Image (cartoon, rainbow, N blue to C red; front, top):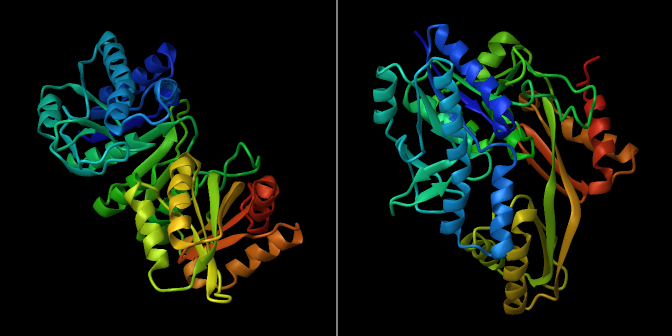
Length: 409
Protein backbone atom coordinates (compact mmCIF):
# COMPACT_ATOMS: atom_id res chain seq x y z
CA UNK A 1 0.00 0.00 0.00
CA UNK A 2 1.48 3.32 -1.12
CA UNK A 3 0.97 6.73 0.48
CA UNK A 4 0.23 9.40 -2.13
CA UNK A 5 0.03 13.18 -1.76
CA UNK A 6 -2.20 14.67 -4.47
CA UNK A 7 -2.42 18.43 -4.95
CA UNK A 8 -5.12 20.10 -7.07
CA UNK A 9 -4.91 23.72 -8.17
CA UNK A 10 -7.67 26.29 -8.30
CA UNK A 11 -8.67 25.56 -11.91
CA UNK A 12 -9.21 21.91 -10.92
CA UNK A 13 -11.78 22.80 -8.24
CA UNK A 14 -13.32 25.86 -9.89
CA UNK A 15 -16.92 24.60 -9.80
CA UNK A 16 -19.08 21.71 -8.57
CA UNK A 17 -18.55 19.52 -11.64
CA UNK A 18 -14.77 19.89 -11.41
CA UNK A 19 -14.81 19.16 -7.69
CA UNK A 20 -16.73 15.95 -8.43
CA UNK A 21 -14.15 15.04 -11.09
CA UNK A 22 -11.31 15.60 -8.60
CA UNK A 23 -13.19 13.51 -6.02
CA UNK A 24 -13.50 10.66 -8.54
CA UNK A 25 -9.74 10.75 -9.23
CA UNK A 26 -9.00 10.65 -5.51
CA UNK A 27 -11.45 7.80 -4.93
CA UNK A 28 -9.92 5.91 -7.87
CA UNK A 29 -6.49 6.28 -6.24
CA UNK A 30 -7.87 5.03 -2.91
CA UNK A 31 -9.61 2.03 -4.50
CA UNK A 32 -6.32 1.08 -6.15
CA UNK A 33 -5.04 0.32 -2.63
CA UNK A 34 -3.36 3.64 -1.72
CA UNK A 35 -3.61 5.95 1.25
CA UNK A 36 -4.22 9.53 0.10
CA UNK A 37 -3.51 13.00 1.43
CA UNK A 38 -5.11 15.61 -0.83
CA UNK A 39 -4.06 19.28 -0.87
CA UNK A 40 -6.30 21.82 -2.59
CA UNK A 41 -6.17 25.47 -3.57
CA UNK A 42 -9.06 27.95 -3.45
CA UNK A 43 -11.66 27.49 -6.21
CA UNK A 44 -10.89 29.20 -9.53
CA UNK A 45 -10.15 32.91 -9.10
CA UNK A 46 -11.38 33.08 -5.51
CA UNK A 47 -8.07 34.33 -4.09
CA UNK A 48 -7.94 37.17 -6.65
CA UNK A 49 -11.56 38.04 -5.93
CA UNK A 50 -10.93 38.15 -2.19
CA UNK A 51 -7.89 40.36 -2.73
CA UNK A 52 -9.97 42.69 -4.93
CA UNK A 53 -12.57 42.92 -2.15
CA UNK A 54 -9.85 43.98 0.26
CA UNK A 55 -8.61 46.59 -2.22
CA UNK A 56 -12.15 48.00 -2.42
CA UNK A 57 -11.95 48.62 1.32
CA UNK A 58 -8.39 49.96 1.45
CA UNK A 59 -5.46 50.13 -0.97
CA UNK A 60 -3.13 49.05 1.85
CA UNK A 61 -4.84 46.33 3.93
CA UNK A 62 -2.99 45.11 7.06
CA UNK A 63 -1.11 41.93 6.18
CA UNK A 64 -2.52 39.99 9.15
CA UNK A 65 -6.10 40.72 8.16
CA UNK A 66 -5.35 40.03 4.50
CA UNK A 67 -4.10 36.57 5.44
CA UNK A 68 -7.25 35.93 7.50
CA UNK A 69 -9.31 36.82 4.44
CA UNK A 70 -7.33 34.94 1.78
CA UNK A 71 -7.13 31.74 3.85
CA UNK A 72 -10.90 31.34 3.62
CA UNK A 73 -10.70 30.36 -0.07
CA UNK A 74 -9.02 27.03 0.61
CA UNK A 75 -11.54 26.25 3.35
CA UNK A 76 -14.29 26.32 0.73
CA UNK A 77 -12.42 23.75 -1.36
CA UNK A 78 -11.56 21.30 1.42
CA UNK A 79 -15.10 21.12 2.76
CA UNK A 80 -16.76 20.71 -0.65
CA UNK A 81 -14.22 18.12 -1.81
CA UNK A 82 -14.62 16.13 1.42
CA UNK A 83 -18.39 16.18 0.92
CA UNK A 84 -17.97 14.87 -2.64
CA UNK A 85 -15.63 12.07 -1.57
CA UNK A 86 -17.95 11.01 1.24
CA UNK A 87 -20.88 11.02 -1.21
CA UNK A 88 -18.89 8.60 -3.39
CA UNK A 89 -18.65 6.13 -0.54
CA UNK A 90 -15.18 6.84 0.86
CA UNK A 91 -14.36 8.37 4.23
CA UNK A 92 -12.83 11.84 4.01
CA UNK A 93 -11.99 14.51 6.57
CA UNK A 94 -10.96 18.11 5.89
CA UNK A 95 -8.21 19.91 7.80
CA UNK A 96 -7.03 23.52 7.67
CA UNK A 97 -3.30 24.14 7.43
CA UNK A 98 -3.02 24.76 11.19
CA UNK A 99 -5.06 21.61 11.95
CA UNK A 100 -2.72 19.65 9.67
CA UNK A 101 0.24 20.76 11.81
CA UNK A 102 1.84 23.25 9.40
CA UNK A 103 3.78 25.84 11.40
CA UNK A 104 5.26 28.95 9.77
CA UNK A 105 7.39 31.91 10.81
CA UNK A 106 5.88 35.17 12.05
CA UNK A 107 5.76 36.98 8.69
CA UNK A 108 2.49 37.41 6.81
CA UNK A 109 1.47 36.95 3.12
CA UNK A 110 4.78 35.20 2.28
CA UNK A 111 5.38 33.09 5.37
CA UNK A 112 7.98 30.33 5.36
CA UNK A 113 7.26 26.90 6.80
CA UNK A 114 9.26 26.23 9.98
CA UNK A 115 8.07 22.68 10.65
CA UNK A 116 5.26 20.21 9.99
CA UNK A 117 3.77 18.03 12.71
CA UNK A 118 1.85 15.35 10.78
CA UNK A 119 0.51 13.59 13.90
CA UNK A 120 -3.16 14.38 13.17
CA UNK A 121 -2.83 13.48 9.48
CA UNK A 122 -1.30 10.10 10.37
CA UNK A 123 -4.04 9.46 12.94
CA UNK A 124 -6.75 10.17 10.35
CA UNK A 125 -5.02 7.97 7.75
CA UNK A 126 -4.85 5.15 10.30
CA UNK A 127 -8.67 5.35 10.54
CA UNK A 128 -8.85 4.82 6.77
CA UNK A 129 -9.71 8.44 5.98
CA UNK A 130 -8.74 10.34 2.88
CA UNK A 131 -7.26 13.50 4.43
CA UNK A 132 -8.07 16.73 2.59
CA UNK A 133 -5.77 19.61 3.59
CA UNK A 134 -6.10 23.32 2.84
CA UNK A 135 -3.05 24.48 0.90
CA UNK A 136 -1.44 27.92 1.12
CA UNK A 137 -1.99 28.40 4.86
CA UNK A 138 -0.23 27.76 8.16
CA UNK A 139 -0.17 28.76 11.83
CA UNK A 140 2.50 31.12 13.15
CA UNK A 141 4.03 31.46 16.60
CA UNK A 142 1.56 34.24 17.48
CA UNK A 143 -1.32 31.82 16.99
CA UNK A 144 -2.41 33.57 13.78
CA UNK A 145 -3.28 32.08 10.41
CA UNK A 146 -0.72 33.10 7.81
CA UNK A 147 -0.33 32.37 4.09
CA UNK A 148 2.62 31.02 2.12
CA UNK A 149 2.65 33.31 -0.92
CA UNK A 150 1.33 32.87 -4.44
CA UNK A 151 1.33 29.18 -5.38
CA UNK A 152 1.72 28.21 -1.72
CA UNK A 153 -0.45 25.12 -2.09
CA UNK A 154 2.40 23.50 -4.03
CA UNK A 155 4.62 24.18 -1.04
CA UNK A 156 2.04 22.65 1.32
CA UNK A 157 1.88 19.48 -0.76
CA UNK A 158 5.63 18.97 -1.04
CA UNK A 159 6.23 19.76 2.64
CA UNK A 160 3.57 17.24 3.66
CA UNK A 161 4.97 14.64 1.25
CA UNK A 162 8.39 15.06 2.86
CA UNK A 163 7.13 14.78 6.43
CA UNK A 164 4.70 11.87 5.99
CA UNK A 165 7.29 10.06 3.80
CA UNK A 166 4.90 9.76 0.87
CA UNK A 167 5.74 7.33 -1.90
CA UNK A 168 4.48 9.76 -4.56
CA UNK A 169 3.74 13.49 -4.79
CA UNK A 170 1.44 14.38 -7.66
CA UNK A 171 0.72 18.02 -8.56
CA UNK A 172 -2.40 18.35 -10.73
CA UNK A 173 -3.35 21.43 -12.76
CA UNK A 174 -4.98 22.31 -16.08
CA UNK A 175 -1.82 21.53 -18.07
CA UNK A 176 -0.27 18.13 -18.76
CA UNK A 177 3.11 18.88 -17.24
CA UNK A 178 6.13 21.10 -17.85
CA UNK A 179 6.57 22.30 -21.43
CA UNK A 180 9.60 23.72 -23.23
CA UNK A 181 7.75 27.04 -23.02
CA UNK A 182 4.16 28.22 -22.65
CA UNK A 183 2.18 26.31 -25.32
CA UNK A 184 -0.44 29.06 -25.32
CA UNK A 185 2.19 31.39 -26.78
CA UNK A 186 4.38 29.01 -28.81
CA UNK A 187 2.14 26.42 -30.46
CA UNK A 188 4.89 23.85 -31.11
CA UNK A 189 6.11 23.75 -27.51
CA UNK A 190 6.48 20.15 -26.33
CA UNK A 191 6.02 18.40 -23.02
CA UNK A 192 9.20 17.51 -21.14
CA UNK A 193 9.27 13.94 -19.80
CA UNK A 194 11.92 14.48 -17.09
CA UNK A 195 13.42 17.69 -15.70
CA UNK A 196 15.87 18.27 -12.85
CA UNK A 197 15.08 20.13 -9.64
CA UNK A 198 17.59 22.84 -10.54
CA UNK A 199 16.13 23.39 -14.00
CA UNK A 200 12.60 23.50 -12.61
CA UNK A 201 13.70 25.90 -9.91
CA UNK A 202 15.20 28.26 -12.49
CA UNK A 203 12.15 28.01 -14.76
CA UNK A 204 9.76 28.65 -11.86
CA UNK A 205 11.84 31.59 -10.65
CA UNK A 206 11.89 33.01 -14.17
CA UNK A 207 8.14 33.14 -14.68
CA UNK A 208 7.00 29.60 -15.54
CA UNK A 209 3.82 29.12 -13.50
CA UNK A 210 3.66 25.32 -13.35
CA UNK A 211 5.14 25.06 -9.83
CA UNK A 212 5.99 27.47 -7.04
CA UNK A 213 9.77 27.82 -6.83
CA UNK A 214 9.87 27.35 -3.03
CA UNK A 215 8.09 24.00 -3.41
CA UNK A 216 10.85 22.85 -5.76
CA UNK A 217 13.50 23.92 -3.22
CA UNK A 218 11.83 21.75 -0.56
CA UNK A 219 11.46 18.86 -3.01
CA UNK A 220 15.18 18.98 -3.80
CA UNK A 221 16.15 19.28 -0.12
CA UNK A 222 14.12 16.24 0.96
CA UNK A 223 14.36 14.22 -2.26
CA UNK A 224 10.62 14.38 -3.03
CA UNK A 225 10.04 13.36 -6.64
CA UNK A 226 7.17 15.37 -8.14
CA UNK A 227 4.85 14.24 -10.92
CA UNK A 228 3.31 17.32 -12.59
CA UNK A 229 0.22 16.27 -14.54
CA UNK A 230 -3.27 17.25 -15.68
CA UNK A 231 -6.46 16.82 -13.68
CA UNK A 232 -8.40 16.43 -16.91
CA UNK A 233 -6.28 13.77 -18.62
CA UNK A 234 -4.91 10.34 -17.76
CA UNK A 235 -1.73 11.01 -19.77
CA UNK A 236 1.60 10.94 -17.91
CA UNK A 237 3.03 14.36 -17.15
CA UNK A 238 6.52 15.54 -16.22
CA UNK A 239 8.72 14.02 -13.51
CA UNK A 240 10.78 16.56 -11.53
CA UNK A 241 13.69 14.66 -10.05
CA UNK A 242 17.43 14.82 -9.33
CA UNK A 243 20.06 15.62 -11.96
CA UNK A 244 21.59 12.19 -11.32
CA UNK A 245 18.33 10.50 -12.30
CA UNK A 246 18.08 12.67 -15.41
CA UNK A 247 21.60 11.71 -16.54
CA UNK A 248 20.90 8.02 -15.93
CA UNK A 249 18.02 8.30 -18.38
CA UNK A 250 19.87 10.53 -20.85
CA UNK A 251 23.67 10.57 -20.72
CA UNK A 252 23.95 13.81 -22.68
CA UNK A 253 21.65 16.44 -21.14
CA UNK A 254 19.93 18.85 -23.51
CA UNK A 255 21.76 22.13 -24.01
CA UNK A 256 18.57 24.07 -23.26
CA UNK A 257 15.56 22.37 -21.65
CA UNK A 258 13.11 25.24 -21.59
CA UNK A 259 12.47 28.94 -22.03
CA UNK A 260 10.54 30.93 -19.42
CA UNK A 261 9.24 34.48 -19.49
CA UNK A 262 7.86 36.93 -16.97
CA UNK A 263 5.64 39.87 -17.95
CA UNK A 264 5.24 40.83 -14.31
CA UNK A 265 8.41 42.95 -14.21
CA UNK A 266 9.15 46.62 -13.51
CA UNK A 267 12.56 48.19 -14.02
CA UNK A 268 13.73 51.02 -11.76
CA UNK A 269 16.80 53.13 -12.45
CA UNK A 270 18.33 55.52 -9.92
CA UNK A 271 20.30 58.20 -11.78
CA UNK A 272 23.51 59.92 -10.60
CA UNK A 273 24.18 58.18 -7.32
CA UNK A 274 27.38 59.13 -5.50
CA UNK A 275 30.10 56.57 -6.26
CA UNK A 276 31.01 55.80 -2.66
CA UNK A 277 31.09 52.54 -0.64
CA UNK A 278 27.84 51.45 0.99
CA UNK A 279 25.36 53.07 -1.41
CA UNK A 280 24.10 49.78 -2.87
CA UNK A 281 23.89 48.25 0.61
CA UNK A 282 21.77 51.15 1.83
CA UNK A 283 19.37 50.96 -1.13
CA UNK A 284 18.76 47.23 -1.08
CA UNK A 285 18.66 46.83 2.70
CA UNK A 286 15.96 49.52 2.82
CA UNK A 287 13.95 47.76 0.14
CA UNK A 288 14.34 44.45 1.98
CA UNK A 289 12.96 46.03 5.17
CA UNK A 290 9.71 46.95 3.40
CA UNK A 291 9.46 43.45 1.90
CA UNK A 292 10.54 44.20 -1.68
CA UNK A 293 12.18 41.25 -3.43
CA UNK A 294 14.70 42.51 -5.99
CA UNK A 295 15.41 40.32 -9.01
CA UNK A 296 18.04 41.53 -11.52
CA UNK A 297 20.56 44.29 -10.70
CA UNK A 298 23.04 46.18 -12.88
CA UNK A 299 25.34 49.07 -11.95
CA UNK A 300 27.00 51.33 -14.49
CA UNK A 301 30.66 52.32 -14.42
CA UNK A 302 31.32 55.54 -12.51
CA UNK A 303 31.57 58.81 -14.44
CA UNK A 304 32.55 61.99 -12.57
CA UNK A 305 32.18 60.08 -9.30
CA UNK A 306 28.56 59.22 -10.03
CA UNK A 307 26.86 56.11 -11.39
CA UNK A 308 23.43 54.62 -12.06
CA UNK A 309 21.84 51.50 -10.59
CA UNK A 310 19.04 49.62 -12.35
CA UNK A 311 17.07 46.70 -10.95
CA UNK A 312 13.78 44.87 -11.43
CA UNK A 313 10.95 44.00 -9.06
CA UNK A 314 7.50 42.45 -9.55
CA UNK A 315 4.65 44.75 -10.55
CA UNK A 316 2.86 43.96 -7.28
CA UNK A 317 5.69 45.71 -5.44
CA UNK A 318 5.81 48.80 -7.71
CA UNK A 319 4.03 51.19 -5.36
CA UNK A 320 6.03 50.48 -2.20
CA UNK A 321 9.28 50.40 -4.18
CA UNK A 322 8.50 53.81 -5.68
CA UNK A 323 7.69 55.30 -2.28
CA UNK A 324 10.93 54.02 -0.74
CA UNK A 325 13.08 55.06 -3.71
CA UNK A 326 11.67 58.60 -3.69
CA UNK A 327 12.82 58.91 -0.07
CA UNK A 328 16.21 57.38 -0.83
CA UNK A 329 16.82 59.60 -3.85
CA UNK A 330 16.50 62.67 -1.65
CA UNK A 331 18.67 61.23 1.11
CA UNK A 332 21.41 60.10 -1.31
CA UNK A 333 21.17 63.20 -3.52
CA UNK A 334 20.46 61.21 -6.69
CA UNK A 335 19.11 63.28 -9.58
CA UNK A 336 16.02 61.16 -10.35
CA UNK A 337 14.30 57.77 -10.25
CA UNK A 338 12.98 56.31 -13.51
CA UNK A 339 10.33 53.58 -13.57
CA UNK A 340 9.73 51.47 -16.69
CA UNK A 341 6.63 49.26 -16.51
CA UNK A 342 6.91 48.06 -20.13
CA UNK A 343 9.59 45.39 -19.80
CA UNK A 344 9.61 41.59 -19.71
CA UNK A 345 12.16 38.98 -18.67
CA UNK A 346 13.04 36.03 -20.90
CA UNK A 347 15.25 33.16 -19.70
CA UNK A 348 16.82 30.08 -21.27
CA UNK A 349 17.45 27.18 -18.88
CA UNK A 350 19.28 23.87 -19.17
CA UNK A 351 21.71 21.71 -17.19
CA UNK A 352 23.54 21.10 -20.48
CA UNK A 353 24.95 24.63 -20.17
CA UNK A 354 27.32 23.39 -17.48
CA UNK A 355 29.43 21.54 -20.03
CA UNK A 356 28.75 23.52 -23.21
CA UNK A 357 30.07 26.98 -24.08
CA UNK A 358 28.38 29.46 -26.38
CA UNK A 359 24.78 29.46 -25.14
CA UNK A 360 24.87 33.14 -24.23
CA UNK A 361 26.42 34.07 -27.57
CA UNK A 362 23.77 32.10 -29.44
CA UNK A 363 20.96 33.68 -27.42
CA UNK A 364 22.24 37.20 -28.02
CA UNK A 365 22.77 36.53 -31.73
CA UNK A 366 19.20 35.26 -32.15
CA UNK A 367 17.83 38.38 -30.45
CA UNK A 368 20.15 40.63 -32.45
CA UNK A 369 18.97 39.20 -35.78
CA UNK A 370 15.41 40.22 -34.86
CA UNK A 371 16.48 43.71 -33.80
CA UNK A 372 15.64 43.07 -30.15
CA UNK A 373 17.53 45.25 -27.68
CA UNK A 374 18.77 43.71 -24.42
CA UNK A 375 18.43 46.09 -21.46
CA UNK A 376 19.78 43.87 -18.64
CA UNK A 377 21.48 40.47 -18.40
CA UNK A 378 21.93 38.01 -15.54
CA UNK A 379 23.35 34.50 -15.54
CA UNK A 380 23.69 31.43 -13.38
CA UNK A 381 25.32 28.08 -14.04
CA UNK A 382 22.26 26.81 -15.92
CA UNK A 383 20.32 29.99 -16.81
CA UNK A 384 20.68 33.18 -18.86
CA UNK A 385 18.07 35.91 -18.41
CA UNK A 386 17.53 39.14 -20.34
CA UNK A 387 15.26 42.11 -19.81
CA UNK A 388 13.70 43.28 -23.09
CA UNK A 389 10.87 45.56 -24.22
CA UNK A 390 7.53 43.84 -23.59
CA UNK A 391 6.55 44.42 -27.24
CA UNK A 392 9.37 42.11 -28.34
CA UNK A 393 8.53 39.23 -26.01
CA UNK A 394 6.49 36.99 -28.31
CA UNK A 395 8.89 37.13 -31.25
CA UNK A 396 11.86 36.63 -28.89
CA UNK A 397 10.21 33.57 -27.37
CA UNK A 398 9.36 32.04 -30.75
CA UNK A 399 12.82 32.65 -32.21
CA UNK A 400 14.73 31.35 -29.17
CA UNK A 401 12.49 28.29 -28.97
CA UNK A 402 13.16 27.54 -32.63
CA UNK A 403 16.83 28.51 -32.46
CA UNK A 404 17.61 26.08 -29.65
CA UNK A 405 15.73 23.22 -31.32
CA UNK A 406 12.93 22.86 -28.79
CA UNK A 407 9.95 22.51 -31.12
CA UNK A 408 7.92 19.32 -31.43
CA UNK A 409 9.28 18.75 -34.91
